[in-house]
Length: 166
Image (cartoon, rainbow, N blue to C red; front, top):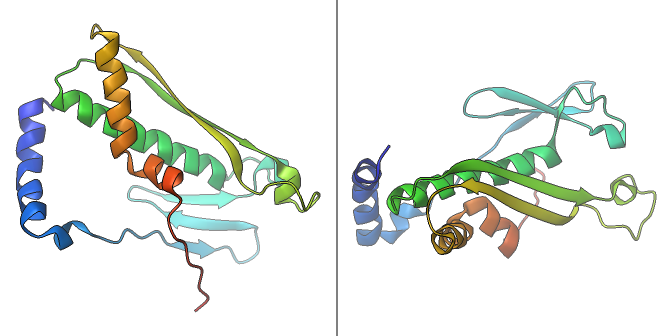
């Protein structure tokens, strides 16, 4: 997809959202089904059913997806798509990789140490880019990606989260 195609695709959406900002506010959903006997939860994605289970560091076999890995994968996917979109709009030719790494202390997750944190303590998002574009353009590309990447901004801003039992 080139710049003109992307802009033509997004033009009517942007016009609609400018005219009616409430049309841009949508609710995304994810649904999971708890396993009957295994320590697992099946999550339907747009393309496949993913069965998530325990990470090997918490007793899992490693045959099921780890939700922590899935969080990092969502970050990589969103950052990669956002970067490609920005690069396309700026007509910057770029290839390369995006990687996310996150540090967890499983003594918190397993309740071994009640003072240990539960969840990621550090997450690193790494762009390894190949391009003939000037370094300043690539830096601006990453800065813009940081600004518009939904998953990254969600992690950075830590939205209000409610938990309900129905």
